Length: 97
Image (tube, rainbow, N blue to C red):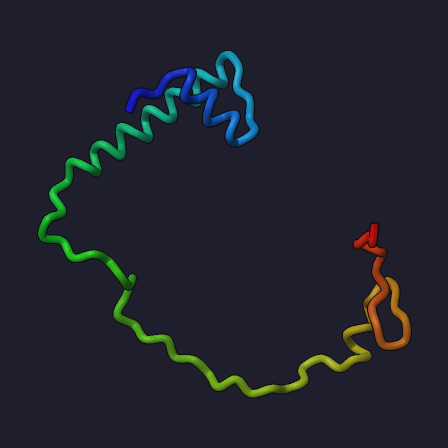
């Protein structure tokens, strides 16, 4: 893949970034290193290699989901900066216009 200024400008536009001068040269150099590394990976013979589906043979041991109250209502509201009887008070975040 040919990494040039036009490609970097296009990718920068898509990502809403801008690169000028030395920063653009550094990005071009980094992208060339990345594509060179990918070319090395493409050269590896993987014909007889099974795809990796799981990282290990371990089985997840899950606990039963037992409902339990760990924090009381009063404890939850105790450190709230603003509260109104049983509820947290927060600034308005939605405008109905």
